[in-house]
Length: 478
Image 1: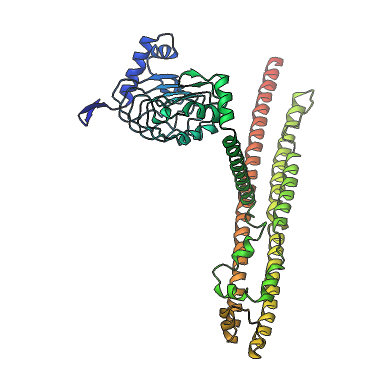
Image 2 (image 1 turned 60 degrees about the vertical axis):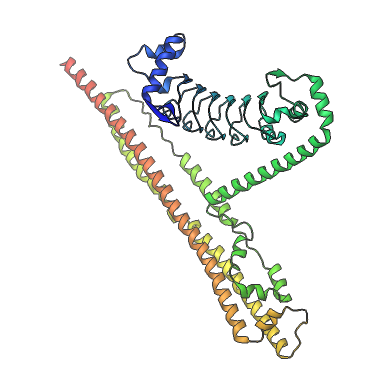
């Protein structure tokens, strides 16, 4: 199907075009797998390993979502302006997009197996959006618009890269181009289709020695920061899964004083500031620790249940059938017993007592803190009345302590807000734990019920088979 854009004829990339390309490819290269597929009555896109779509005036990449096995894709010499529609090509190792009108590198996030990427002869000015292409070994971006040498440094993150082509870009015309690339990419073998000899690498290493050392230090710091961030994210996820995120530090404590301007003013009083520094921070990870212990013990108890069918040694068919009937009843009893064991978790004291006890301690700490602050406030009010207030105290603090009712109202409001924060976090934790508990118990019960039903069904079939054999024996004896 042809359309026109800007005076040029363009091709719509649809199933018809794709099938036509596969047929032509099979005729030209019958030894390829595509040729074998064409012999069948139907073309299966998900079995195609290589696809050539060059010189077809394609404007938009489309209809490739079924090509999940595709390893090599050629889309060179078309009118493509944007890299898109490649998300499902997770097995692609080769991508050729040369001689198009692409201005930006994008849409490559899913191509984690890509090894060869050719973007030569386009309109690209920035090397970017390739972070997931960790396996890339060949990168060609000749005859584009890359201007600055430092813009090429983005490629340093690709440790397997050994061939780069930047020929025809403005950057390749700079005086130090070859030495710069050789210095910053010591593992590179080929540059612009020419080997980088050891002499060039050694000279480049000497010339850029100090700059390289500084950059390596910066990269190491960035790597350490990334690792620390990933570690923190993993920790938060772990804590979130255990329903105790942000309870291992001062997050809950700090959140109690948010949006409380009077509290900020009171903190300027020396005694209150000292009280804040010595405020005992209660670790709520006892909940997480006890939860882990209970779950581990519970799972171990579940593993002790022997799912194997009882093996009964029999000599006569009647005895065997009777024994199997007894086994059937035993299994039914076992099912009931297992479900009763599973339901014990529902009433485990962890789910109520431990959580409630911990947050009771939090409330006690807040009450204790509030009582001490009130005493300090009363003493400060008395000093104000006697004109004994510290001269260095800020004016807004002095103004606050001229009115006793204002001070006490501020303390009461702050105390109520702190308790609301603690109660809200307790409600959130208990609600999530209870929801998880219900889902866990239901999952175990459903699994046990299904497994026991299958075993009982198998026994019924086996018993029927034995009765048939018994009837056959009786028939022969008659």
